[in-house]
Image (cartoon, rainbow, N blue to C red):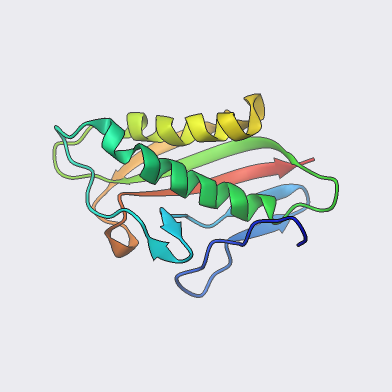
Length: 142
């Protein structure tokens, strides 16, 4: 694990990511740093979307770190195949895809074109710790 970032700290009995062949599947990642939630609360309609940028980016960074930590020597993330973005949305919020755009931007900054993934942005009633966003990735190593 030399040169790798520390895995995000699991908040239960699970692993941050698993690998089967060249496929890497991450757990859902919230915006935590060293196991501590950095952002909380429902995503509110009428709030500037920019308020949620760093939460989405941190959750995406945690998922990407978990995926990268499953790489073998000399490999890289060849492609992010799929990203699921869960948005802890208050009633009336409908810009889920805009929150997902923040995570997509992060992945593209980190990986270039291979960071552009198929994705789903899903509004839900709640997330662990009342996190505003949770992100799960499916990646291909190469």
